[in-house]
Length: 131
Image 1 (cartoon, rainbow, N blue to C red):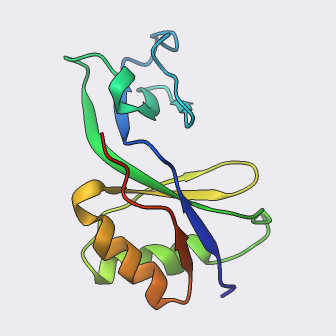
Image 2 (image 1 turned 90 degrees about the vertical axis):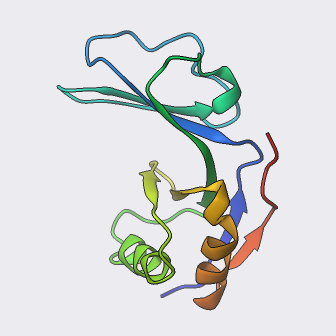
């Protein structure tokens, strides 16, 4: 596997679950936002400071993004990364964009995630965001 540089998104994120038919909310903002709609839900990942209280959500997530374009024909990257994280008991929420991949981990497991990725030879740029 290639060695990657991961960049830590500098804000804590929340993964919110909303009803499937709901429009994308105005509060879905920050430097990192992703929205996924399925027949059964609308998921929004964004800066946790913008997500209203009472919204079903998982808070205190930290995103580590591969700082390069990962071709869509590449095989096994997420499997290898997730295997290393699983070996250290770090749950992961993966997000893929057109260009690259992001791994979201809980802030309280960030140190273990960093060790797991560095153990594979990857570099981590950035520190645990405070929120």
